Image (cartoon, rainbow, N blue to C red; front, top):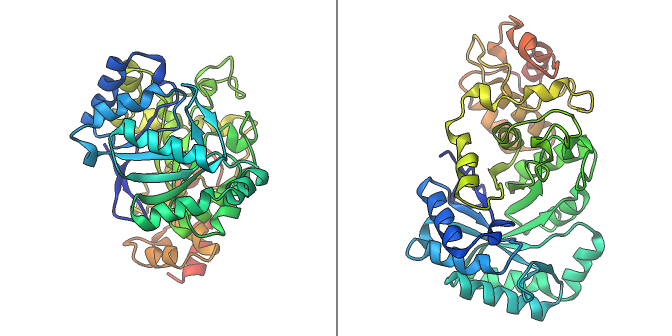
Length: 364
């Protein structure tokens, strides 16, 4: 299992996490076994925006005596009083729900406390008006919440909350369909979404990814907007290549689903390669580097994707990205203009010209 460091902390988070939206459809024994098997395989991040109340007791049993091995993502606004998922901005109900969740999980602290499902400005205003955000901040000050997060599908609202400088993690829906305006939650233009990912990277806000498969549609040629079936591994890699992403949270229902997801950890570069999407007429990434590394390996050992990422971030004013670039062993100045990358880039990026531009910008 690969791990990525939380920018605003020391936590090392597994690149594959677990979403629990559907796991409550099975029995408790299977739920406990699935979570334990996930932990045994190195997964340490669990999202608890579950579809069912019974998930919490099962997760609590699974992590008993190994609570320190996992990070829990708990949502302030998710309400389970009916036994199934509901949404509320009522502060008293949120307090009751969170207290109940902690009891079922048998824990007294929250690794990531999330402002839940803010897609409209009215939703944010309701959370503020009812004192929910002040409550979350108070729990953070008490040390009960370690990190504050936000779940949303809307770049505009994400940027509004980023302006408040209070979150360390964003849960956002990332997949090739949504990034190209196809799907129920495909909010924002392609460039707007990428700029939001870059802003998160610049400001040290990590992203945990939901809906990486677009609700399964991308895995089915008949349902996909591209009329082509991608694999789970391709979708996971696509999300992991986006700036600021630290973990992808596929939903699992049982151990069989988990085994399928874990195939990513043993996948070859060829199996992870999602460059096929460059041939889809619906995809708007043409002539834009998406950091997919399909142009690798470089004969001069340049990390072309990383050089491009640091350059794009630096253009946004990210001083840390500039520093990272200057500390690279191989830089744009080492490019010999052989054209190998240009021939391999599925998105038709002129990397030879990019290396020249980057050399001029960084002066090395």
